[in-house]
Length: 169
Image (cartoon, rainbow, N blue to C red; front, side, top):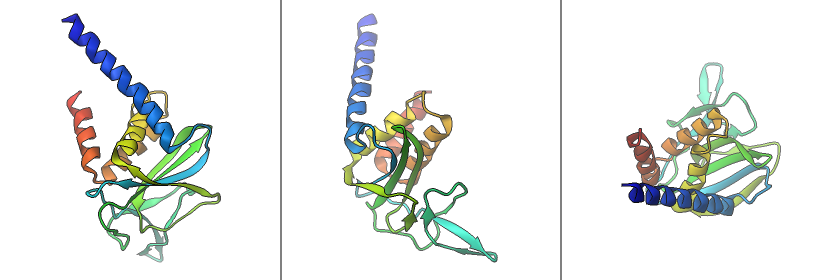
């Protein structure tokens, strides 16, 4: 009985170590500020974008990623073809602080430059998110943002991961 448990822990440890190295492939160590990448998964999609209210009317002006009070909506005119989910992550001292998954048609602005890491595989993307979600040393709100972002991606890989998380409880 102990051997299967030992092997299971070994596989788990290997996965964590491997996922940490892969996460660095997207965001190199020591890089702060906003980063973005697009997920290469044909089924993933989102219409999520930011909205503003002016005189009782909702308008899409895009997302100021630096803003603190951001309102999101998925029923605007930000829809993009499936497979064009855009991930945004802000790092401070190498630690994720803000995470957004938006439509690639959602205009964004920041006070600083956004480092674009191009097209990222589903595997790389999921490894990065897993390292954030499973890192109990990170702030709870950042881990929640990562979970929320995965749900917004409508990705099959994200749903499989979330199902695995829920079934392990």
